Length: 279
Image (tube, rainbow, N blue to C red; front, side, top):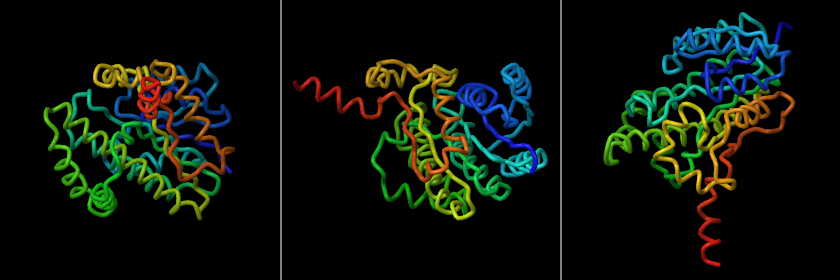
């Protein structure tokens, strides 16, 4: 048996980098993203913490790129952990289609390609967002979600059509983002029960507003989440990193098929703020 390999997409910054810091040092880290210079800088930081680190560029929206990454990871040793933290948010310079291809189809590519190369006792953690809880589940959403594996272009087309009903580019992107993250929660649960018989554990984790570069871009539009949080603050990257690494640890072996809502209470905070005002 070779060395244990933990793969972290979006590992060059933010929550992905923070998660890497908290992974056990007996696991070699393979961090990936689209910008090599950012990855190399992150690798140096992780090495200072005692980790063995490999870097490899990858665009998770491109299945061929993900397949190449998975093959490289398998060549390094035994893939025991995959943390899929790559993603885009509405405040970035992006389109509805890009949000869906990276956040949603990227999750399909990662889960499918890596699960073929992972064995018993391994784990995949897919990062969603508490925006997945912004709207009630709709049977139409699930109907479209089912297209992702077999008809990815139609999947994107249908969800872009839904999100285009919002007014203004930011809100169109916001709706597409919400749908992409609802999909991640749905798909991770689906994968948990498909991969479970092989011994692969799958969990999703939904952060709230976190003080990363991406989180700061959403602070104006999502600032109400701070007021709704139990401590009325944004989360810190290392708080989230620790939570992700804990979920991704193989020793947490009975945690599967669920979404971990790690948002400081902001999703449920509106209800409690209202009840307090009524007293």
